Image 1 (cartoon, rainbow, N blue to C red):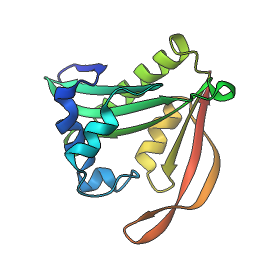
Image 2 (image 1 turned 60 degrees about the vertical axis):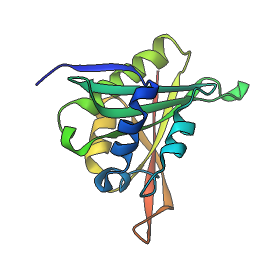
Image 3 (image 1 turned 90 degrees about the vertical axis):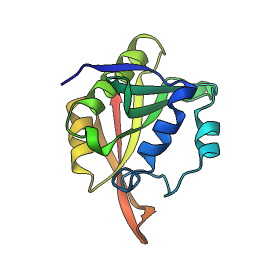
Image 4 (image 1 turned 45 degrees about the vertical axis):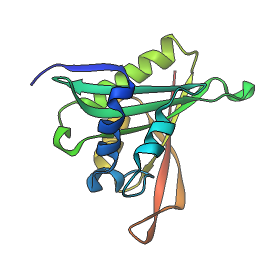
Length: 162
Protein backbone atom coordinates (compact mmCIF):
# COMPACT_ATOMS: atom_id res chain seq x y z
CA UNK A 1 0.00 0.00 0.00
CA UNK A 2 1.16 3.52 -0.69
CA UNK A 3 2.21 5.81 2.13
CA UNK A 4 -0.46 7.79 3.98
CA UNK A 5 0.46 11.48 4.04
CA UNK A 6 -1.23 13.73 6.62
CA UNK A 7 -1.36 17.46 5.93
CA UNK A 8 -3.47 20.55 6.52
CA UNK A 9 -6.54 20.71 4.28
CA UNK A 10 -6.29 23.20 1.43
CA UNK A 11 -9.02 24.79 -0.70
CA UNK A 12 -8.27 22.30 -3.49
CA UNK A 13 -9.37 19.51 -1.08
CA UNK A 14 -12.80 20.92 -0.27
CA UNK A 15 -14.71 19.03 -2.95
CA UNK A 16 -12.99 15.73 -2.11
CA UNK A 17 -13.86 16.24 1.58
CA UNK A 18 -17.47 17.03 0.65
CA UNK A 19 -17.66 13.90 -1.50
CA UNK A 20 -16.36 11.69 1.32
CA UNK A 21 -18.94 13.12 3.74
CA UNK A 22 -21.65 12.58 1.09
CA UNK A 23 -21.11 8.80 0.95
CA UNK A 24 -24.11 7.07 2.60
CA UNK A 25 -21.82 4.68 4.50
CA UNK A 26 -19.98 7.70 5.90
CA UNK A 27 -22.81 10.06 6.85
CA UNK A 28 -24.65 7.11 8.42
CA UNK A 29 -22.08 7.23 11.24
CA UNK A 30 -21.72 11.01 11.53
CA UNK A 31 -23.98 13.96 12.28
CA UNK A 32 -23.91 15.03 8.62
CA UNK A 33 -27.01 14.99 6.46
CA UNK A 34 -27.28 13.68 2.90
CA UNK A 35 -26.52 15.89 -0.10
CA UNK A 36 -24.15 18.45 1.44
CA UNK A 37 -23.75 21.62 -0.58
CA UNK A 38 -20.43 22.91 -1.85
CA UNK A 39 -21.05 26.25 -0.13
CA UNK A 40 -21.68 24.61 3.26
CA UNK A 41 -18.37 22.75 3.04
CA UNK A 42 -16.52 25.79 1.76
CA UNK A 43 -17.80 27.79 4.76
CA UNK A 44 -17.05 24.98 7.20
CA UNK A 45 -13.51 24.49 5.93
CA UNK A 46 -12.57 28.17 5.85
CA UNK A 47 -10.03 29.09 8.55
CA UNK A 48 -11.63 29.70 11.95
CA UNK A 49 -10.09 30.29 15.40
CA UNK A 50 -9.20 27.05 17.16
CA UNK A 51 -10.06 24.83 14.17
CA UNK A 52 -7.48 22.62 12.47
CA UNK A 53 -8.48 20.70 9.34
CA UNK A 54 -6.37 17.68 8.40
CA UNK A 55 -6.55 15.37 5.42
CA UNK A 56 -5.02 11.95 4.84
CA UNK A 57 -3.79 11.47 1.28
CA UNK A 58 -2.80 8.31 -0.55
CA UNK A 59 -1.14 8.91 -3.91
CA UNK A 60 -2.38 12.53 -3.84
CA UNK A 61 -5.99 11.39 -3.34
CA UNK A 62 -7.84 12.60 -0.24
CA UNK A 63 -8.75 9.43 1.66
CA UNK A 64 -9.87 10.92 4.98
CA UNK A 65 -10.60 14.12 6.88
CA UNK A 66 -10.24 15.09 10.54
CA UNK A 67 -11.31 18.37 12.12
CA UNK A 68 -9.88 19.36 15.51
CA UNK A 69 -11.77 22.07 17.42
CA UNK A 70 -9.85 23.50 20.37
CA UNK A 71 -12.22 25.09 22.89
CA UNK A 72 -11.98 28.88 22.82
CA UNK A 73 -13.37 29.56 26.29
CA UNK A 74 -10.49 30.16 28.73
CA UNK A 75 -11.61 27.57 31.28
CA UNK A 76 -11.89 24.89 28.56
CA UNK A 77 -8.85 25.87 26.50
CA UNK A 78 -7.17 22.58 27.47
CA UNK A 79 -9.92 20.63 25.65
CA UNK A 80 -10.45 19.75 22.00
CA UNK A 81 -13.04 17.67 20.24
CA UNK A 82 -12.84 16.20 16.79
CA UNK A 83 -14.74 14.66 13.93
CA UNK A 84 -13.27 12.18 11.50
CA UNK A 85 -14.33 10.38 8.36
CA UNK A 86 -12.64 8.08 5.89
CA UNK A 87 -13.81 7.38 2.35
CA UNK A 88 -15.42 3.97 2.01
CA UNK A 89 -12.80 2.73 -0.46
CA UNK A 90 -10.07 3.48 2.13
CA UNK A 91 -11.63 1.71 5.15
CA UNK A 92 -9.42 -0.78 7.02
CA UNK A 93 -6.19 0.62 5.56
CA UNK A 94 -4.89 2.60 8.54
CA UNK A 95 -6.18 6.00 7.41
CA UNK A 96 -8.17 6.73 10.59
CA UNK A 97 -5.26 5.66 12.80
CA UNK A 98 -2.84 7.89 10.88
CA UNK A 99 -5.15 10.88 11.29
CA UNK A 100 -5.72 10.19 15.00
CA UNK A 101 -1.99 9.74 15.70
CA UNK A 102 -1.27 13.08 14.04
CA UNK A 103 -4.07 14.77 15.98
CA UNK A 104 -2.82 13.36 19.28
CA UNK A 105 0.72 14.56 18.54
CA UNK A 106 -0.57 18.05 17.72
CA UNK A 107 -2.74 18.19 20.84
CA UNK A 108 -0.10 16.79 23.21
CA UNK A 109 2.92 18.67 21.90
CA UNK A 110 1.77 21.82 20.10
CA UNK A 111 -1.72 22.94 21.09
CA UNK A 112 -1.59 22.63 24.92
CA UNK A 113 -4.58 20.28 24.82
CA UNK A 114 -4.75 17.79 27.69
CA UNK A 115 -8.19 16.33 26.96
CA UNK A 116 -9.56 15.21 23.59
CA UNK A 117 -13.27 14.43 23.41
CA UNK A 118 -15.57 12.79 20.88
CA UNK A 119 -18.99 11.26 20.46
CA UNK A 120 -19.59 8.06 18.52
CA UNK A 121 -22.75 6.08 17.85
CA UNK A 122 -22.86 3.02 20.11
CA UNK A 123 -23.22 0.67 17.13
CA UNK A 124 -20.14 1.99 15.30
CA UNK A 125 -17.93 -0.79 16.60
CA UNK A 126 -15.03 -0.32 14.15
CA UNK A 127 -14.65 3.34 15.15
CA UNK A 128 -14.93 2.56 18.85
CA UNK A 129 -12.16 -0.04 18.49
CA UNK A 130 -9.87 2.50 16.77
CA UNK A 131 -10.53 5.11 19.45
CA UNK A 132 -9.83 2.63 22.25
CA UNK A 133 -6.61 1.58 20.48
CA UNK A 134 -5.46 5.20 20.75
CA UNK A 135 -6.28 5.56 24.45
CA UNK A 136 -9.83 6.91 24.37
CA UNK A 137 -12.20 5.66 27.06
CA UNK A 138 -16.00 5.61 27.22
CA UNK A 139 -17.16 8.12 29.83
CA UNK A 140 -20.91 7.90 29.35
CA UNK A 141 -23.85 7.34 27.03
CA UNK A 142 -26.12 9.93 25.47
CA UNK A 143 -29.52 8.31 25.05
CA UNK A 144 -31.45 9.22 21.88
CA UNK A 145 -28.44 11.35 20.98
CA UNK A 146 -29.21 11.90 17.29
CA UNK A 147 -31.67 11.09 14.54
CA UNK A 148 -30.43 8.58 11.95
CA UNK A 149 -32.58 7.05 9.24
CA UNK A 150 -35.73 8.18 11.05
CA UNK A 151 -34.79 6.65 14.42
CA UNK A 152 -33.00 8.03 17.45
CA UNK A 153 -29.71 6.37 18.29
CA UNK A 154 -27.51 6.47 21.36
CA UNK A 155 -23.92 7.68 21.38
CA UNK A 156 -20.95 7.19 23.65
CA UNK A 157 -19.02 10.11 25.05
CA UNK A 158 -15.35 9.19 24.85
CA UNK A 159 -12.21 11.05 25.88
CA UNK A 160 -8.45 10.69 26.08
CA UNK A 161 -6.40 12.59 28.61
CA UNK A 162 -2.72 13.32 28.28
